[in-house]
Image 1 (spheres, rainbow, N blue to C red):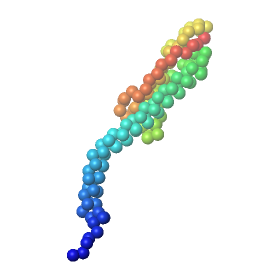
Image 2 (image 1 turned 180 degrees about the vertical axis):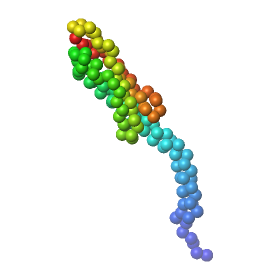
Image 3 (image 1 turned 90 degrees about the vertical axis):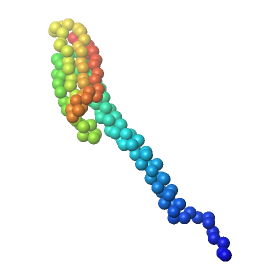
Image 4 (image 1 turned 135 degrees about the vertical axis):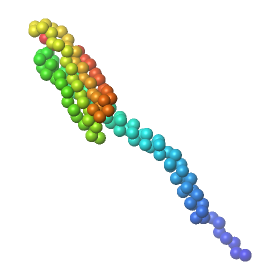
Length: 129
């Protein structure tokens, strides 16, 4: 009888290895899906934080004129990079009497319009004369 060389893998061993690998990958699929969903949510939250931060920066840069700050009040809708609409509402407290130095509260809130979930909010006091 001739000696057989058994150094290589048989077709059955390769198929079994591929099957085991496929089972492991299927088990990791939920982790991948969860990671993708979390990444998408983080993109929307980061955009909301950026929009609110921009509103706060505008308010502080408009400084000492209360009328200029009051002009910031309103609602805008912008989309994040994935196309999710975000409504940013800027509220400005009442201005003090003319000639009076005081602070005015400015608040900006970002809400996801399709779900109504508040994503970010920020408030600041702006000195006016």
